[in-house]
Image (cartoon, rainbow, N blue to C red; front, side, top):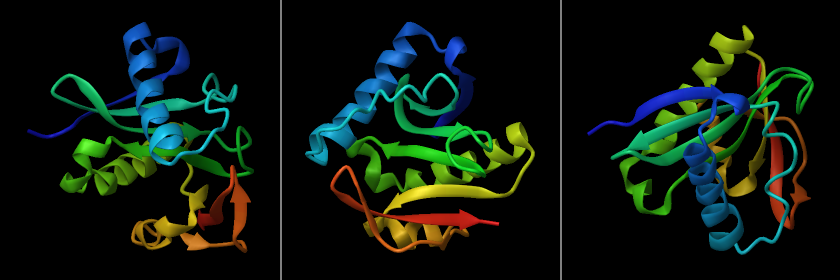
Length: 148
């Protein structure tokens, strides 16, 4: 069974979709990574929400931003695959969908991300190049990466 992809604006999300995507983000970014930070950061209202569903459950997710809403260029953030589903390599499918979503919705191929350092090779495999020194974001090493 494949993932079913959809992109929605914040105002188009159902209450259940919003709950499920916030639960997934919290499960990974707060609990799994043991990182206390403000996940609900006020930017969800500006983002497009890319969701991958499997068996009627959101298991893959990313936020997509137009240029100027997060970085100077369009951007992708909160990239996450549910813990139980990582063996399926859906992270690559998620990134392909996110890049296509940026191009289709914001009509640009220029994308900037703030990537966790340990995922550098993963993002490089999708065409991103490192454009900054390592920095701490919520006490986790990150690098800025871009596709131009």
